[in-house]
Image (spheres, rainbow, N blue to C red):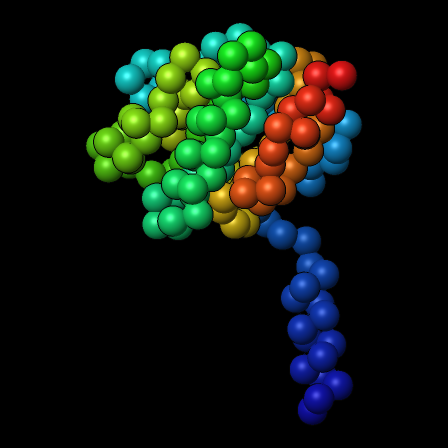
Length: 154
């Protein structure tokens, strides 16, 4: 019985997923983010590096992460822009995100395949991307810092 259960569990774990999630490899191009629109029509500003922040308002760590990202993006001569990606309804999420939006921080409205294309399973999660649309770093956004930005622009 234990052996059969182990085999079934292994098969379930190793079976191909029917989602469209994609593995993101550092140094490789990332999927194109297709936003249906932008909160307050704030399109992302041009920048040397972009940080995609996957966000959900139910997680308090996401707001902590946004505060840190705002500090990093709004420093003088910062090469960073932040694009917040969320699946939440615009009417509900816009008031929560508005205090963080700026010329350097934008938020998507229903980005097509955003979470699934990047294989995001937890938040806060982010991906640092260079001007050629290649992944430079990814992980828990609370671990993202200025040193990573500096390394990306060297």
